[in-house]
Image (cartoon, rainbow, N blue to C red):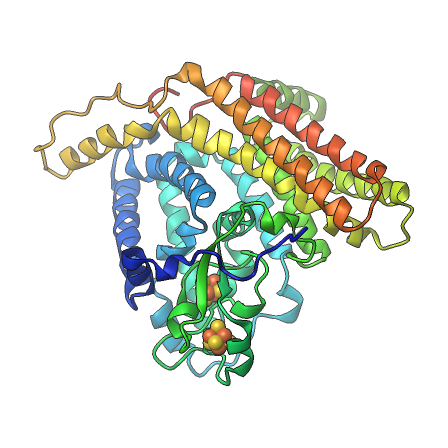
Length: 467
Ligand code: SF4
Ligand code: SF4
């Protein structure tokens, strides 16, 4: 069975109109400029607009629309947010400042541990500070993103912000493992004969790959921001943005590096998908109250750190390592646990994506997408533009709320089936016997059942008038 198809079957860059648009030298800049305008509006409203989150552009766009659109984009195309990311727009200026710098991101930080840590911290802060409820804090997060991206670009001679730091990029990198588009090349022979390797080195006019990926050797979407600089820089028109089977990457045994940091990133990402939804249902408040009484504290930050420390760090580590130990034992292998983990952990990704999708795209976006209309009307009224009338705050759902439970159930079941299929494919590729799959199938079932229970509980809407 051929698990991965490096030769493009269909190259989006060679389609008549879209291909030219994507390859256009200023194409990415145009997308980033558009997103920058939206970010500036969000900043303006976040700092000066209404304090009530469901009526403010900063909170509604960030916590309802951004998350929903990202999930649909990842499912239907790929990492389109990073492609149009406004935070890296000042990169050219920052690069000029760092033009004579040869500073490299420290070797001991050239891994995913920083990203894992920031992901855990970010979701803890999100709950503790109720970021979704504060336009002001949301605006400050946007400012922090711009500053961090600019400073890291200016200080280091590569793009460490995207590759090693940005929690949004990390979310998109991991999720885009199941996206149907990926970067590859048409001919490996052309690449072998290519002297300049402009796709990674740049060609004078166009920068090479900022995250230092080499197109002919790419096996995954990990670290690819879809900027398409490689395609613009390649003098042989050899880079492709190709369609693939969305499960091709997670099935491919060598697609991801077999490292602890990468494995932990996937495990933590899987458990955060549940804990983030758990933070919005009634049992979390009962658990918080019980812990506060038991610990004799009223500090919510401490209690949430305890809850999310267990859910997002200890459980993924314990259950992941436990499943790997058992799987290795049942396979009769003598190998490092790191290798067993790397073999099976990517199989969690389809279900993990399904949980995020059901939560962000299903529950939050489909039940609240139209809120953008009254919020925009309200913003325009605030700045003195009354052409679009008074806001109708009843606008919101794209789908009736009663459809959500069946929708989320179907999405999660598709995720379970895809993850089972990947476990099976990976076991067969490694010649592991069926019993070696059992711990992973059990872990997937456990995550799925937890996901279904949480999704079926009453959940806070967050960011809309219906909350
Ligand atoms: S610049 Fe083009 S031809 Fe050269 S190595 Fe990169 S993708 Fe291959
Ligand atoms: S491989 Fe590098 S240059 Fe090409 S799209 Fe991905 S991040 Fe951009």
